[in-house]
Amino acid sequence: MPQLEIATYPSQIFWLIVSFVALYIILSKIIIPKISFVIKKREAEIRNNIHIAEQTYKDTEIINDEFEELKKKTQEEAKNIVNKLKEITNKKISENTELLKKNLEKRLKKSEKDILKKKNKALKNINEISLNMSQEIIKKVSNNKSIKKKQLVTLIKKNVKEIY
Image 1: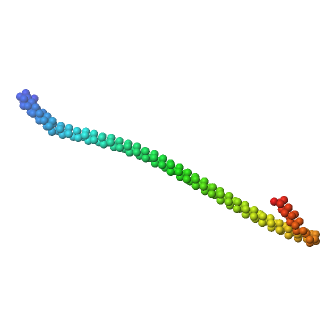
Image 2: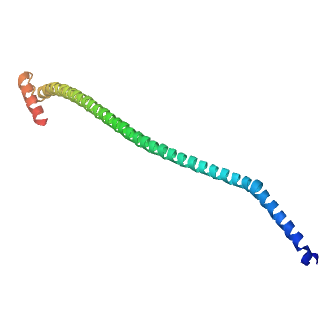
């Protein structure tokens, strides 16, 4: 095997050193700077993204706080509106109830007056009919045609008062 011969060692060592130096120069001057540039760029991008994410998170927290505050205010306003509407509705209901009670009382009084008038009219009719019938009955039973009308009226009124 030729690589194991001692006579070729100096040339192999020379080319090994030349190859390693060339490889070292290529790596240190071309490849490593490109790799470090990409790594630095990525680190800067990552830092920038982290900064943007933190800022976005802070903005989101601020927006959430504002939203919660607005939500609370809106709920309070809604409660106030509902309470005011309840109060207005209750007032209207009580006003309408009072008006209805007054109207019913007026109708009741009017109906009572009408009933009283009709009752009095009926009693008058009863009195007149009773008077006429009594006169006719007395005339037929007693054959007495001179019955005093005033006595009969007082008797009938007395009897009607006892009934009612």
